[in-house]
Image 1 (cartoon, helix red, strand yellow):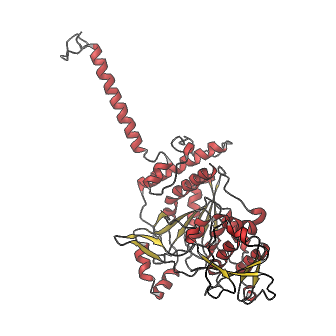
Image 2 (image 1 turned 90 degrees about the vertical axis):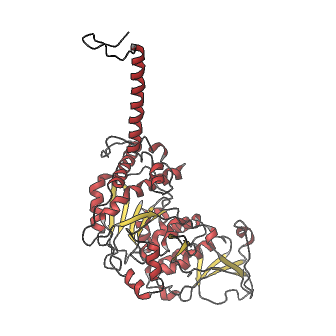
Length: 463
């Protein structure tokens, strides 16, 4: 039967109704496939795994909070179901990540610098990057006794004294003191049955340095005595051993990774803890009843801490403005706090500020010594000044099972800039003394990625 128009005239196709229906079905199917393909293309970030592959972050998918997390009402924070609220939160983060990557950054305002945020790729915080010597006190050769991890508990008893000897040329400055104290803490955890000591030249000289003095009190509360250099075994009652961390003052400046890729770099230097368990034991002894083993998972609002360094070098000028914009963009999903300074606070007070945060954004500086007290899956964005990229605090984050991101001026190379300043003390001093002008827009642009990294880690940690 031929196809005709409304007046009964043949249209000249010569197709039967059955053939025409088949053609229309095929056309409809092709159109449907095209629509689906276009939808997928426009939602190329539909799962967290896609997000991380696209941004080369390497994080895992949020599983049940991945592709099906798009809830229509992303601004509704009133649901009593924590899982529903968390899905809505993830959906909002993905939506902002997609729009941010699509639209990019507008030109910065005067006195602002856009920062590029990237994930730190160095694998550290493991025993492979931590070395220490162990030898009998009366052994002039100082030949290290090689032991497996499980042998320390078996070999060393209450008849042994283990003395951790540390030295750092800047022990009076608490970040550098921590570079000696944290390795000592970690080493002495290997000897729970022995009498344990940390050797310190002059304990009295640290009385006025609150952070250091508080840390020494933590050592003593854990059964680690502080002693002056000199013999303690005058009666030969104990076997005396010397333990010493190696290379704690090893330079931590960036070095090229491969000659053909000068913008790819690794960070040299040792770790300060043997493993994560040692970090957790230090946190437990300091924080006691305030210690939180891990994140609550679906606990909202997310706690974001911005550190300003007010009145100090590398003061982040736009910290408060950034907090205001985060509140405006995220509402009740995020609780943001700006810390102007920690000067005058006790060690425990400082540690708790970092321990309670889910995401921390801060300029590089001494206050980041407290990153040793973060919980697993805490995300840290450390902002570096131009020409002053170096490695200290990344290793604290990774040792505590956190996630470290780095912010550096957009369009510049931290490797090339810093290599110019390594052997130029005047240039280094100038770089580290300037104000930080990281723009609120660039931090807000990076925030969804930090949120998704945090939540992905939490879910993976709970499996």
